[in-house]
Length: 113
Image (cartoon, rainbow, N blue to C red; front, side, top):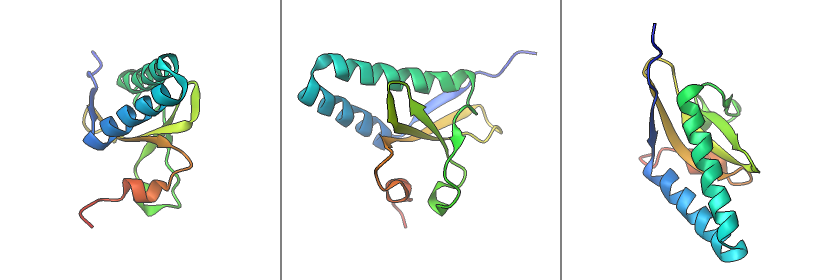
């Protein structure tokens, strides 16, 4: 039996967060840190193709985070990749890539509310 290929879908806001953090690191510390950031993000996201359940379930105490998983970035342990994977379809949806000190429930709340 062949394993299904997991598709990765990165939300627009997550792409913006990644780019903004990269630009911040480039401005404050230089190109090397910016490149390390992008490499860490890319590796974390690509690792979800192989093991999509590797991230821990998000804090259950926040209703906005129910069903979400989070993955720490190697080399940037305070940054988190928030994603959804339910196992019924071969797809991981990356919703956000942020520093853990941010108001996570506000960041991940449905904007249509």
